[in-house]
Image 1 (tube, rainbow, N blue to C red):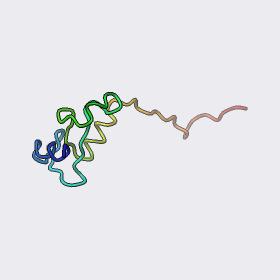
Image 2: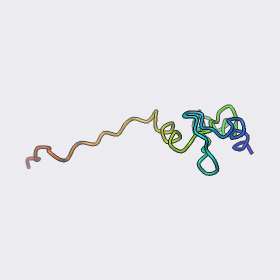
Image 3: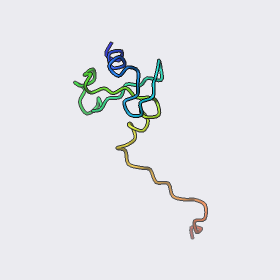
Image 4: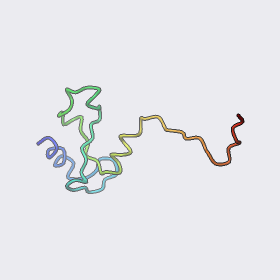
Length: 79
């Protein structure tokens, strides 16, 4: 019910890039994550309609970037 209200409110368009999204491609994103405040889980003002690409970006924006060392071209480890 809340999901469909958010979809209607945004006329089926991603709030980040403006693309039209439909069905399973329409993702509802919690601005304040549920684990930070479970009481906002179904609060319409805490929900944004996003396309899958923008949802992935939003979910990972605040996470620290993983840095992987380069294994190629590294000097050999001496025993």
